[in-house]
Image 1 (cartoon, chains in turn blue, green):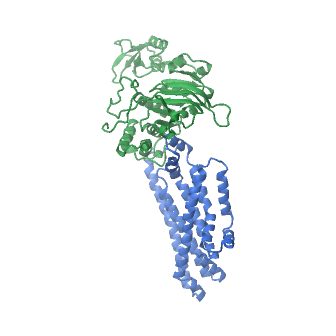
Image 2 (spheres, one colour; image 1 turned 30 degrees about the vertical axis):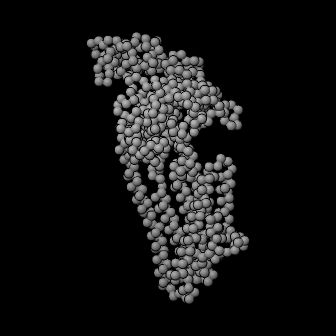
Image 3 (tube, one colour; image 1 turned 90 degrees about the horizontal axis):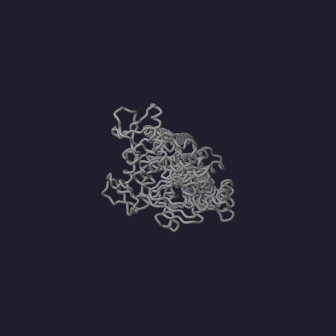
Length: 258
Length: 352
C-alpha cells in the first residue's frame, strides 16, 4: 500500500524534514523584515512634502494595515464557513453533474475580474464594506471549494471500503477518515485563498471600504512614489507573511503518520 | 489478562473442538465461529439484465474456513460482501446461527463480522493501536479493556506491543501491515471473518509465512471464515472446504480439498486443480496423522510430525531412502513411513 520505511530510517527522516522546514520558515520573515526596513530607511532619507506626510505617518499606515487585515481575515473565515461545507456536500452528491456545475460557478467567480464584481455590486446596492466582502469571497472561494472536493476525492477508496467494512457509519467515515486525510489539501487551498484575498482587498478602496488600497491609489493619483512604494511593500509583506503562517499551520495540522 | 470480562457471551454448543479449551493458555476466552447459511441469494445490479450472483445457496459450518475459488469476475467477492451487506442482496436469505442478517442494522452487523481486504486498508493517520482499537471503541469497550485487547492481539501475531503500539502504518513492512490488518478484524472477537485475498499482494515468501501463521491462529480461534482467493494452492493449504465457483457465482463443487483433488466434479474443476493431483493430495496429509510403522534401529533421514506426506515423498526421493523417520518437535522418533504408507494414505482419502 505505502512505501515501506524501516523503523530505523523513520526518525532520521523526520529530523531532516524539520531541518528543511526550519530554513524555509525563516526565509520569508527575513525577506519581509529586510524589505520593510529598506523602505523605512529610504522614506526616512527623503524630505516629505505635506501630501506625503499625510499618508506616510504611523497612525495612517497602521490604520490602513489593520483594515486590510480585517478585510482579509473576515473574508477568509467567511470562505472557510461557506466553501468547506459546500465542498463536502458536493463530494457526497451521487449525481455526477453536480460537482462540475458547482466548480464551474466558483470558477466564474474567480474568472470575473474582481473590480467588475465590485462595480456591479456598487451600482446595485451602493458602496461599503459588505460589497467589498462579497466580491472578496466570490473571487477567492474557488481554491478552497476545489481543494475540499479534491481532498476528499483523493482519499484511497480502499480505506473507505475498510472503514465501511468495519461498521463505520457514513458520518464516521467522513469525520474520522476522509476529513483528517483531506486536511492538508484543504489547507493548501485556504492558503491560496488567503493570498488572493490580500491582493483583491486593495480594491476595497474603490468602494470606500479602506485597506492598503487607499495608500496605493493615493500614491498613483497624487504621483508620489514613496507613498505608492510603501503601500505596495506593505501589501506584499502581508501576503507573504500570511502565506508563511498558513504554511506553519499546514505542517502543524498535517495528520501524523502521513 | 484474564481478569477482565470475557467477551464470550455464548459459545454455541458443539462448536468447541475437543482439546482446544478456550481458556487453555490463560488468554481471553475466544468466541468461536457461527454457522452461516445463504439461501437462494441473488444480486442483480440496477440496469443490468444478467444477475451478478444467481440463487446462491450454501451452508458454512461453524468454525470452518471456506475458500471461494474462481476466476476474476465470477462473483465470488460479491457473494462474500453480501454476508456483511457491503453489497445488499437483491433477494434471498442469509443467517448467522439462525439470526436473519438482512433484518439487522448493517453498521451494527458489520461490527460483528471481521473484514480483511487485499489492500489491508490501515488508516495512515492513526497509530497501530488506534487502528486495532477502532471496532472495540465503536462497540463502547472501556479504555482498559481495549488497551489490553490491543496488546494481546499484537502479541498474538508476534508484534511486540511496546515497539509497535504507537507506530504508524507506513513505518511497518508489508507483512507486518497485513498482520495488523488481520488482528484489527479480530479485535472485537467476531464469530465470523470475511477475507478478500488478504495475502494476495505480498511476495511469495511473506505470503507463505502469513498463511502458516494464520492457519495456526485459526486452529486456535476456530472462527467461521469466508476466504476469497483465486489461488487454488492457497485454497488447498488453508481451506477446510473449497467452493469452486463458476460464472454468476454458480457453485460447481463444494467439498473438502482432498475430495476436490480426488474427485473433481467436472473439467472446469479439473482445470483449477491442474496437474499432479495425487501429489497435491499428499500435501494435505500430515505425517503425524498416519499410523506409523514401528521405529527400527537404523538411523534414517527424518521429517517432523507436522510435515506433509509431500515432504516425506520428497525426502524419500532426495535420500534414495526406503524409509523415513518421523520425529516430534524435541527430535524423538515417533515411528517410520515408507513409500507404501504414502500410497495407502492416498487411497484411503487422507486423515481429514
